[in-house]
Image (cartoon, rainbow, N blue to C red; front, side, top):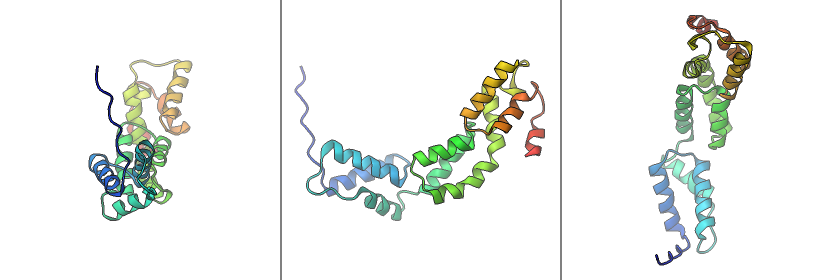
Length: 177
């Protein structure tokens, strides 16, 4: 039988700084995510004295260049677009990651420019519309449209892609946008 683990001592300011530094060196993160992580550590282990404002620690790390919310948002948006996810899913993920409205607004044109390519990537992965092996009936087409909408794509774009015949040229869809 193992002996019980000793409880960890409460955090102090230097140990909280070390935790924050270790977190940002291991993970790409935002100010909000770092502050949330530090708040969780303080709740878990306690703090020796009055706990500091974790948002100020995150701001100080951002000023030092350890955290860049906009760069994190750009990387996350590009990765999600490569996976075929639409603008609504991307903006929701950015909001959830704590990207501010100003940074999200700066990323919005890039997300909109990649909308058709992301939708076609999603359709290719799910074999929808022109990437299907055979024509589909109305019920299956509605399910495909619903999947694309859940993927964050707009209804009209999803409907156009799902209505395309198998093997149809997708360049006409890019030209229409």
